[in-house]
Image (tube, rainbow, N blue to C red; front, top):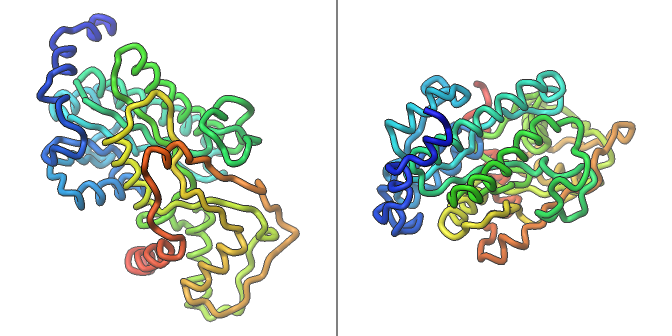
Amino acid sequence: MKLHTLRANPQILLQMGDPTRDSSDFLTDKSAKIFVAGHRGLVGSAIVRKLQSLGFTNLVLRSHSELDLTRQFDVDSFFAAENPRFVILAAAKVGGIHANNTYPADFIAINLQIQTNVIDSSLRHGVKKFLFLGSSCIYPKLAPQPIPENALLTGPLEPTNEWYAIAKIAGIKMCQAYRIQYSWDAISGMPTNLYGRNDNFHPENSHVLPALMRRFHEAKVNNAKQVVVWGTGSPLREFLHVDDLADAMVFLMDKYSGLEHLNVGSGKEVTIKDLAELVKEVVGFEGDLVWDTSKPDGTPRKLMDNSKLLGLGWTPKISLKDGLVDTYKWYVENVVGQ
């Protein structure tokens, strides 16, 4: 069947406009079938916890071994069989600078395949509302600070992750195109730097916050006298606990149906120095913190402008310290010794 013929299938169009599917908002029917793609990752697992805490009882979850989202036929067959009402796409191939530099083809191709398959199948099988999760790396390297949504595509990307960023930009634009052409309710949220349970604490390719937590913990356990951190500690960064992100995603699914993607951040900045001191305190490392100023600092400031989301009525609730305490507790119970 040709693609344009499938688009015009009356049965599908009727299903998309069926009042039994469209008459209630997201939070009304707790038995609604929701497919959370990427439910084992940092973001997906937090969204599942949030939905379960709200009483949702019909979550559809598939591991990579159960459903390979890069395989179009498998994804389409899954949607035909399950027919979810809502879809949240939190699945992606992610990694640090080294991985992006080493496997650029994987980062652009796999993410484009996942997005295209899931977005397209969602539309064709009558999904009522779709949420796409992106990343702050979509913005230009030299974007204005705080970064507004309209900074997208106004300048060159950060070269170290442009392959991943281009895929995510394509996902945003695909949601917008499907909304324009098919009047389909697809929205996109762009989170800032995230942390929390199920984060990546790998010693070589984790992000700054889990990397600091691991290093301070190992230094404490080994009775080390000091921990050395690169740079001066002066760069400013923004962090959002992943449970706050999950809360924001549920808020958007319930309240937002716009064309534009929305930034999701804490709105609060912290220097890397203050962050390191706070992680050191939470972990309980009593040695010295030494800054290797011969090493580079990186971008001096990166903050998302989340005023549009705040204007809709959502606010973050978890302080950085409380979030770090929760994350460290999870790290000790689930990662240490594994």
